[in-house]
Image 1 (cartoon, rainbow, N blue to C red):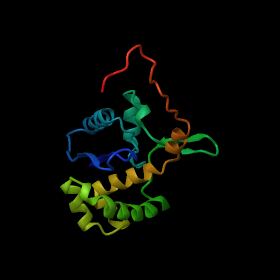
Image 2: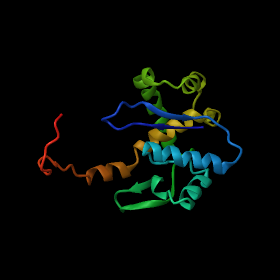
Image 3: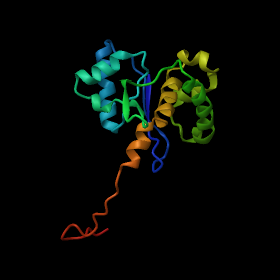
Image 4: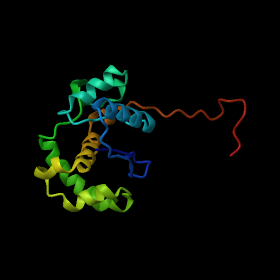
Length: 169
């Protein structure tokens, strides 16, 4: 199970896709992951205990969709994409998850995720709550230094007047 989320400040902070299907093969699941990430234009930040995700994305030529942890001091990325479920970051982000639930639960239209919220008992129960683990991964990804680095180097260019005509709105 996994979720894709829209978390840009300009957007609604709402869940985008829920995937709850058990295909016959791992490759079929991974192909579905690629299609969802391409469709949504989303980066993939998988749990690192699932190395087949990174390998498959790269083998199929979609490695650019993988999100790596970035160290802005060294300017280097880690060797593997994703996050570990066994780090202090998870503990910190479970608190953020609780705050996110309070702030955005009214926007959540995914009944299975809401049901998991009702039975979630903390980190030790995370392996029994796949959708919450996926949501937690997105919260951790939002803290990735890559996005701050990328945004700091993005430019907004005003193209008004560059065309011989101006569109009529």
